[in-house]
Image (cartoon, rainbow, N blue to C red; front, top):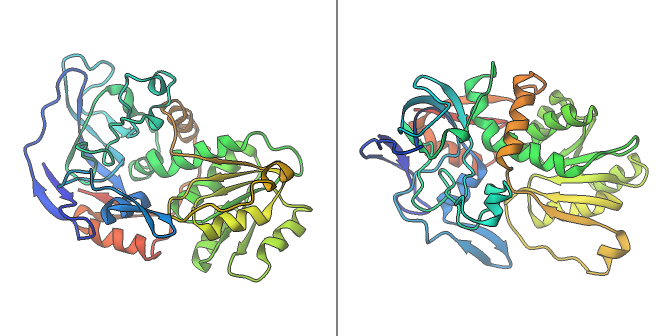
Length: 350
């Protein structure tokens, strides 16, 4: 089993060769055909998340070498004796946000929020899809993607699911309600597509990059705004007659949150999704005085993934820009993503 692995935090990935695992019990061995590169992989490679004010959430507990990659699509190669509903040769997308299965959070169906997770490519000792093979603990995590592009199907397991789950938290807009997306990278573009399908109305989009704003326009955003522009938030408030109903922040910085707070109307919602870093500072009286709802959204549940894939199979979701690269280019792709050079999504192919 050949993989591109972290052998030292902050350093380029290196190829490692380990025995291919044999599935036991309900386990399924999947030959990886496509694996998307996610911005959270950049943080894992760096070895920390930025918490603002010089504070970091260090990932020193992650044993090395570690194989990242959680946007996985591939072919079933083998399965254990108790694996049901799957057969060798099936092509499936892999839900990676797997919990312990033994706590109240998992019993509620919220495995993605488990405090003792087994997330593929993210949790300690659980290798992911930057590899020729990946071991999946149960067939229920293998999702049918219908006639969608296999490479695109891989990206739905994080980029798509993250966008879909965040849009579900928006609720049900009524006539005149506007939704604002901050950040038009791969997840933000997915957010535009899912908003169009779920609300039958395109959202407004903002970014600091002209090429990404162009991509948002091509994706069907109702309007785009350059957040570098002076008074951009005030213009949004004026154009929406008082501010937007909900902001979905796919960036997650102090600056993006400040922009969201300036653009949202009284009684509105701010849904923070991005992990770029920083700290939240806000006068507490303004929460009740503005009747704001501020919430976080972390990927999505298995049930949400199944609902999302139903939209995909029904061909209600348009594809976002996508490029494929060989697995050996994993480090370069992470660098490109870190430097903001990627529009849409890049998928690695072993």
